[in-house]
Amino acid sequence: MGDQLHRVEAMNLRLSEREWAILAITWVVLCGAIPFWFLRSGLLDIVGRPSGILILICTLVILLYAGSRLAWIIGRGEPHLLQAVWWMFCYVAGSLAPLAQLSTDHSTLLIREAYRLPATVLVLVAVVAFDLGRSLWDQMGGGPPRNRVRYVSERRMVALSWAASIVFLYAITAGGSINQYFSTRQANLIAAADAGVGPGASQAMAGVISGAIAALPLVALLAWTPLFMRRGPRPARVTIWWFALLAMNVVVNNPISRSRYWFLTVTIGLLFTLPGMTKSRFRAIILVGVAAAAIIFPYSDVFRVESQYERPISSGSLQETLAIKDYDQLTMTGNGIWWVDETGLHFGRQLASAALFFVPRSIWPDKAYDTGVEIGIALKSVNVNLSSPIWLELWVDFWWPGVVAGLIIAGGLARRFDLRYTEVLLRPDTSLAVLRIGLPLIAGYEFILIRGPLLQAMGRVAFLVLALWFITERSTSRADPSSDITATSQELVSHGPRKEPF
Image 1 (tube, rainbow, N blue to C red):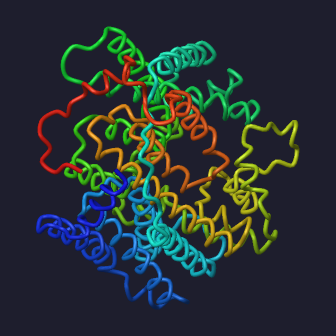
Image 2 (cartoon, rainbow, N blue to C red; image 1 turned 120 degrees about the vertical axis):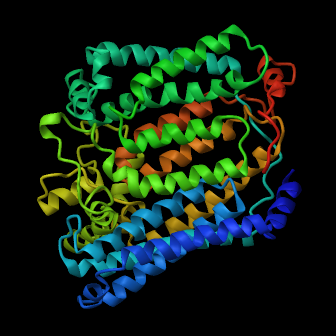
């Protein structure tokens, strides 16, 4: 199977006429039409500012780099989810939003304008380092990928489903009412704090409980979905568990009370778990994701706060909205560089605190706060719920060597797991493969991990990984062919012929 995958990868380098057309159209839109539209006015103002030309050049290089990589993945229809999400984030948050800030002269909080250029350079280095890691993985052989596929265990799926049910009932009873999950995110957080499971309690315990409430029902639902979606008769337990878990997720993982980034994780996980994935569907999901990130996402915060505190929906242009809302990664990178200039490097303190998120401060009094929070406090900002993108997390601890080395490793790992995921998709009997269920979840959550802060993001990703590990069949190669779950997985069929199979 490893040789088959490499042959497929080599063949895919020779694109069909249709794939070339899709690639070309995507590239023209992402790298031509959109930046031209953003710069159609205000270009002279940009070049007239101090370092304006250098900032504009670096921003356009990031845009062209990320946009070209994204166009290539879309054109080929590669199911390389981890890389696609990285390039999508770098395109929108790392170049498009900064370009909007330059063209409109509107911006999120930046301590001093002099830090915009070094921040832009840091983002550019991060983009190149990630791609270098991908390239090095290919040059070093990177495998071939293992010929083993691990499947889910039905007994463990049932156990996880019961655990999700218990956690769900606890969340409802501790919060006082199910209505809190259909109010606003602010009301949900207040109810959680009153119940002793939110920010008002121990942050470590709050992160653990919040991660379990959100992650366990989601992983359990996605694990049952391939069985529920198969054609023909299905066991009653499959139907019962699927609808029960769907109801739980509607309550605890809806877009009203959960963050928009987390709902993105839920959506991507569900879309890629459905059977019959094709190149066309993959392209559509990624293109809609880019459009949603740039256009819909900045306007989608209407459920975050109570109505009396709600800010009016912006009536400005898309550029103005993109410049001042949500995508503060470039300005926070600049603020982070200033913070390091003021306080010095932290030599692993921030990353260690994120990795050991579950350790309470009563045991570790010097445990760091979220990097974004630390910077917000230093800035004396009223709102300290600020991002700290992954390149900034690496920078504040280990400076340039940390950024380069960390993102080279990240790029190589993303390539490795994307290739492994592609191999799994090539097999006809892998609808219940753990990687096929788990990697889309991690790819969806990747947006949160890249945005940061890492300490804030670690609780849920830890439970996602633990839940996926728990439901994995413990055999060394694949599930026992005589087991009920494997027999069911062998019966799974795609819904109709694939027009563009992977």
